[in-house]
Amino acid sequence: MTTLEEHINRFTSYFHKQVKLVVGLEGNESLMDREPKEFGLALHKKMLLSAILDSMARIRYYGQKISNTERFVGIVSEHGSWLEGSLVSTKILRDRLREKGIDSSVLVARLDAGIAKNQASSRDQFSYQ
Image (tube, rainbow, N blue to C red):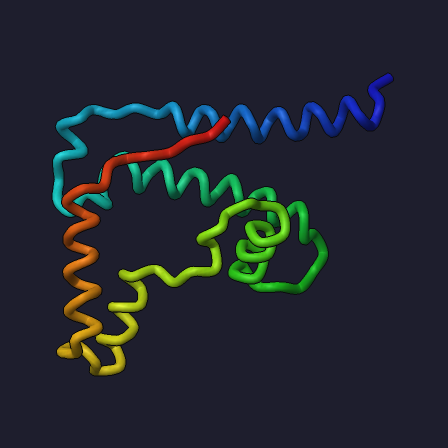
C-alpha cells in the first residue's frame, strides 16, 4: 500500500520532470531565425511552462471561484520566489499607453528604446534546478 508521502513525492516529481523536459527542449536553429525573436523556441518554452504553472494553480485553487489571472498570480506570489513578479512588463506598459493615445510621449520613446535594446541582446535563457 502506498503512503501519503509516496503519493506526494510521485506528484511533485512528475511536475519537476515536466519542467526539466521543457527547459531541455532544443530546436532547429533555422526555425528560430525568424523575426521577431519572440516566435522562436523561447516563446514555446514559455507557453509550456505557463501551462505547467496553470495546471499546478488549478490543483492549488481547486473549487475556488477565481479567474485564471487570480490563480496564476496567486500561485506565483504565494509559492514562488520571483522577485520581479510584481513589476510591469515594458512591452505591456508601452502597448497600454498607445491604446490610450499616449504614443508620442518621452516615456513611450524611452520604452521603445529599452525594448529594442533588450531584443538585440536577449537570448533564450531559462534556469531550473
